Image (cartoon, rainbow, N blue to C red; front, top):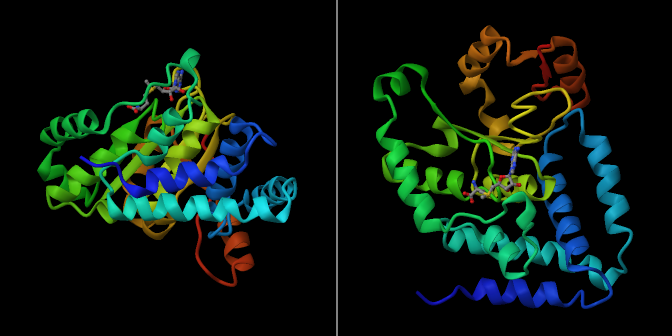
Length: 264
Ligand SMILES: C[S@@+](CC[C@H](N)C(=O)[O-])C[C@H]1O[C@@H](n2cnc3c(N)ncnc32)[C@H](O)[C@@H]1O
């Protein structure tokens, strides 16, 4: 299959940073700003901190370089709209040779992820799905999210509206990987919780972990209450803090938002 024109466009824009900045720095700055601009669509507890970090990053660059970041994000969005069946950022990360071999960062080729998603779909308990109204899918070493992107596409092909009926759960020890996953799942409209932390030592909502909720998660969070009730019952989950919900709802001008806190 011919390579999408967006691959070349992305790499061309990326190369404009030249040798003035390291590829690694530009990649991470791009990801953080893309992720923060999506996360900050919702007035969360972390909003101010993320906004400040966004500003400190963008202000490092002169105007002509600042404009390249939204261009890169535009290309990622167009590439995923043209073909949602791909791990676009994961492949750019490899093409730019930024992957960290010491962390085992070799992302699964999309067709293998697709095959594995199909296998997982066989395990979906249809009765439970109907009763709960949703299914969950988790990748505790998510990388750029190839497996979860494939699951979204396979769910859609099986008649499941993944934007409403699937709760995506992702974790990676590496912030760069987790943010690639966050940005792609956000663009695809997946309700997702992306966690930065060691899934062996500090799984899920461990207090040391950094958590990123996608915009579609906030739109649909009420659908997934039973998931959190189960987590809470296991003692591994989260509880709603009513005071914070009220405070943020007030700040958001009455708009209802939810804040999750660790149960422990
Ligand atoms: C082989 S890649 C797979 C990524 C993705 N699942 C895929 O199939 O494309 C493994 C990922 O696990 C992450 N990782 C390694 N050790 C981890 C740990 N203890 N907890 C969470 N993530 C970890 C790495 O940063 C890397 O992104």
